[in-house]
Image (cartoon, rainbow, N blue to C red; front, side, top):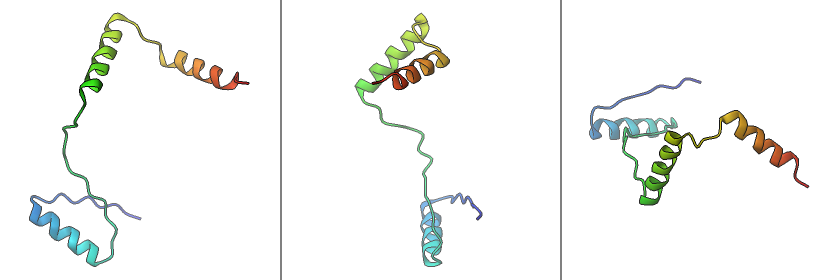
Length: 77
């Protein structure tokens, strides 16, 4: 199967392309280029805390965290 990416210049073109593809019974997935994501105050606070921890060196390397995770799972009784 082939994937074709179409970038309409405006809403009218977008609607026309979607209508045509639906009429032809061609499945489609639509995404917008919205780059902004809404983040709650609690999420922002958590991100800031994480960045502070990184600056202070309060982090665990990935390989160590992975080792702890597997030990915790496989040593459960």
